[in-house]
Image 1 (cartoon, helix red, strand yellow):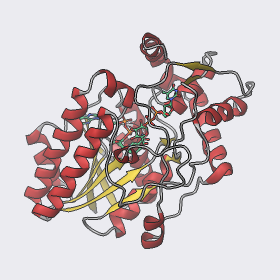
Image 2 (image 1 turned 90 degrees about the horizontal axis):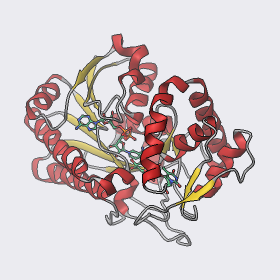
Image 3 (image 1 turned 180 degrees about the horizontal axis):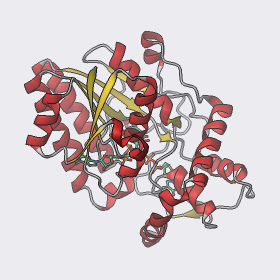
Length: 336
Ligand code: NAD
Ligand code: DAU
């Protein structure tokens, strides 16, 4: 069996990756390392805990990282501080985990000659103008806007440098905005769904013209698996499902409609400082070279993915209800 170490496996995408892997890739023996920050939740894995090894720990703990990397064949690196708004209020944890933590993973991978896949974001490229018809490609220059995206850009640069200078066996993926089950309710889509379920009006930053290229988390994780199997070492792959046709306002209106509210049952709140306008992904390399095909594409796919996500938050209110008041109180302090 191939031993795979999943960093950040108790978070949103990492826990979905663990479930996806157990279902579709029984050839892997999974170990998770997760610090269980406010964003990590061991309950995301409660049905599968006996099938995996779970280590509570910090990727900045050099000795622990060294030991776990030495015991595994492949490392898939999801662990990060992931929320832009938090990075504007307190950037230091972003530098520690995203930059220093990635450094410790890279050094351990180098020492033990292991295969690494580094999970990154489209935000490293900055943003596009609303009327710019272009999309981000693997060649787009880096131009991050927030402390979060700058720290992820820093981690990508470290991976590239370790590939070039030390010849480590690594790949990188840059993916657009994910949605799906187990996403923390501080994030846009689950915040609005749980707002409506709590009889609170959804909150739209500024005018809501901003565009995100939404992708269902299972489509992201199928891409990560394909890159592990067939990706060219040293290469970067853009991951996106061609959903850059809806802006935030339209997403909120769609959520309101799917949840039986009037499509204008939401309110505008303070905008995010430095708010990126538009992300759009050109994933032709991943599709043509590795044969990737996302399931939740275009308007119908997005509608189906959102409906499934709404159903999940509706059926799992014990998962988010205890956190809701705290998350909303924090946003309220910022006028959001
Ligand atoms: P998340 O915040 O939901 O989960 C992050 C996980 O990492 C949590 O379980 C947390 O406890 C853990 N963690 C944080 N600091 C740690 C540390 N020092 N040591 C060990 N574990 C630590 O994030 P997510 O949305 O699941 O994102 C996962 C990865 O995917 C990140 O690298 C992010 O940059 C990237 N990404 C996210 C998106 C998205 O839309 N969410 C899109 C593209 C890329
Ligand atoms: O693009 C990939 C990135 O997507 C990932 O790298 C990040 O980890 C992930 O958090 C996400 O970043 P965003 O900042 O785009 O996601 P967020 O869910 O915070 O916001 C999505 C959009 O919705 C953004 O334009 C801000 C807006 N927004 C957000 C919240 C929380 C609102 O209008 N209202 C809200 O309440």
